[in-house]
Image 1 (tube, rainbow, N blue to C red):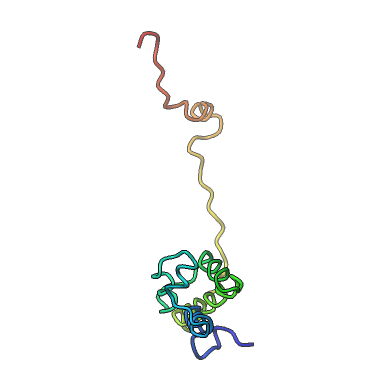
Image 2: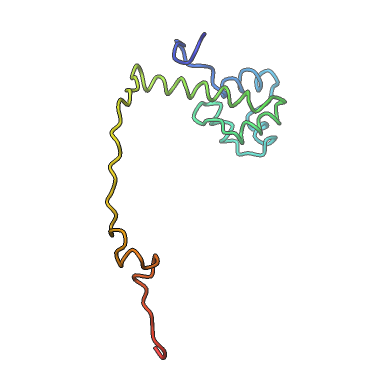
Length: 133
């Protein structure tokens, strides 16, 4: 099975797919797509240029404008993100946590039955004022 860990090249990003498979064949400009989606041109241009990731909101807008599913755009983005993360991490492996030490118990601040423990919480520092003050 081909995974992001075994791939030799970076997966096709959503921007390249958008440009090569949707915009160019249909003769749609980035500006026209941005207007149809109701977003600034910078958002579409950033995705096409690979400087901006596709968010869930953008995936929904792209799917509505182009007749696709949001999953298409998110899956393309996730594949790129996973590949990039794998490249950053390289061959590092996660260490086994091994045996964990038992948590040390903390001694209570006041021993059971002491006067400080029988006072309701927060009442210890409460200032009471007498009549006329």
